[in-house]
Amino acid sequence: MIDLRSDTVTRPTPAMRAAMADAEVGDDVYGEDPTVRALEDRVAHLFGGHHAGLFVPTGVMANQVALRLSVGPGEELVSDADAHIVAHEGGAAAWHGGIQTRTTLSPRGLLDPTDVARLLRTGGEFTVGTRAVAVEQTHNRGGGSVYPLERLTAIRELTTAADVALHCDGARIWNAHIATETPLAAYGALFDTLSVCLSKGLGAPAGSVVLVPRDRWAEARRMRHRMGGAMRQAGILAAGGLYALDHHIERLADDHANARLIADRLAESELDVTAPETNLVLVLLPEPGPNAAEVAARCEAGGVLVSAFGPRLLRIVTHLDVDAASCANAAAVIAAAV
Image (cartoon, rainbow, N blue to C red; front, side, top):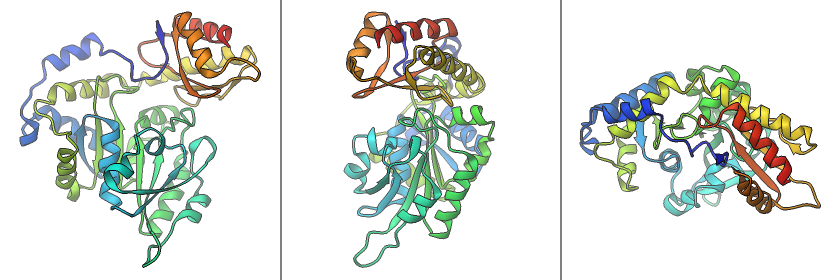
């Protein structure tokens, strides 16, 4: 099978497995796992040292810890309507945090500063006030779209003026860094909180790091514990993340090239393809014709796995476990299935 459903399907490389097997570990609930501490410090340093890092088992937990530091129960979070925190986290912000979301549809999921200015509300006795704005870099449902640094800076200026926090769901921010050559530290300087994923494009088996203000790190640890995210000898997982940071960031350019290869091949078949900026390809299926679930089933029968991302929308994701030849073969199977 050529699995293009997500960049989460990768297997740890033999070298990553060796690094995990050799990891020095301790009890992280007591704060005694040196490999976890090293990973947290390393990620914080990569993003400019503005925050403290906290290792958590999942990206959803990373986002929820960050949001709850800024937005209390009954308070408001502004985001794009297709944001991962709205569409794909099981309503966790409302379920766990009592957070109200206020959303707007944005082209390819990228908030416009003009819309942000319109959406920000000052709280009062009878009005729910905005406490945070969330952006997603890169944007999953936007097809791996990338916020330009200038747009993020403009949003930061608005939130600062309104005394509103700015959070970045940076699950695939590594892809944005490679695609635009924007320094990670430039991103880190913009956000009050930032979550980054190790188990997507970087290929680690599990884990995310949430970056939080240094004076709120202990509070974030308590939140992680309440959510069931405190782990014991977690350095085995953290070692996979450290290996990924050393070896798998620069190679994301290969995934981007493979996504363009697939998109170009599908465009040659006159399919409606969103031009990929990073490693995600969206295909809007023609009407009349089979729907996304039917096309995905046909692809699976041909040895290729893709995601039905909507009634007539396919998502294709490249990653370190597929090479250019596999992607070319997959494109032929997908075109035939459509």
